[in-house]
Image (cartoon, rainbow, N blue to C red; front, top):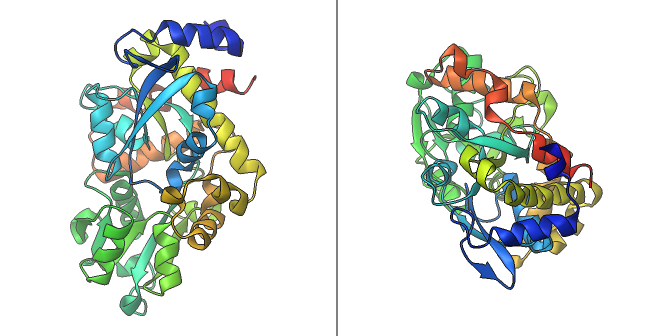
Length: 343
């Protein structure tokens, strides 16, 4: 089976094109390429999904014989639900959703990692910075997250647990990301928030907020978790893996190429390759990427210890996970990344 994944590019392209008329991954061709539908768990430009944006900009999906079609959702929960419902073939999401859905009898697996650390910062509204000086000062506060049950919500539970509290001790406010997150803080609807770049950098540069915990780095992530924390990556349903492994492989190949580019180029060089709609303010985007790039996976490999830490955070969040559902290996399939790394 591994040999299938290690096929030459020419052979892989032939196999992909043979799937063009099949359901699930397209059903139609565009310029001789196989259509694949990918949901993204955020608005365009969220740093934690940079490998997708960069692979699109550099033409890596097309090079793999794909006509990749994307929809960007407000938050990860909606994207994962759409994937589980069969509306999309893969999603760019946090692995939280795979763990959560396992308990509902719906199975998703991660096939490539984008980030080995949460890439999330706990930011505090400027006028409260003197009052909220550590996680111990969060009790009774309003915490902004992207969506109910999203990865930012789960991380908030772990931060509170580390401080000796629980979600019952705060008010959780779903605020989305980007402009909607910033507006919620400006309107004082939230006191603190779980932000990702470029939202974090926009808040810092405007002076509207300051950082209390920076989980873009191994050191500060280690204050809450013991080691790495698997966050975003590519999720897929097992039935898609069984029916269309060549298509899954092609998407992973494009992702690994993008991660290699991130590792070998400066933030300014990366930003220059992205479309204006993704970058927005180029100065802010470059600063955002410089701030968050330490969280990115080096080659797409998924770390079992990082998945285990995420599972523990789900339990802290309150997920009822039977012992049989706590094995990190249930939530990943590394064959595609291994094959991509041999190219």
